[in-house]
Image (tube, rainbow, N blue to C red; front, side):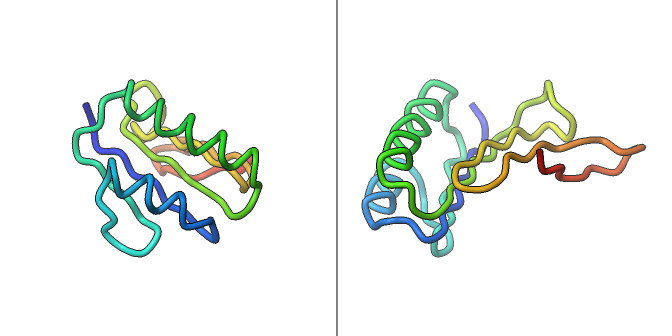
Length: 97
């Protein structure tokens, strides 16, 4: 289990209702869960992805700890260009694909 964060921008209220049922809204559009399991994170992201594909408004960004990637952070996005974290000689950068 690890800290999980989802950031929403310009999305319908249904996202807020759903996300506040499983995460804490620490700032408008920013949701965190301190100990979300991988299975719950994947299910939550699947629901959000299905809605986003059906509606197509706004954007969502999911971030969680993953020690197998540079910076130990994994990023998934909907509605924005895909991004990855890269290590450039010890400096972590966000790279848009």
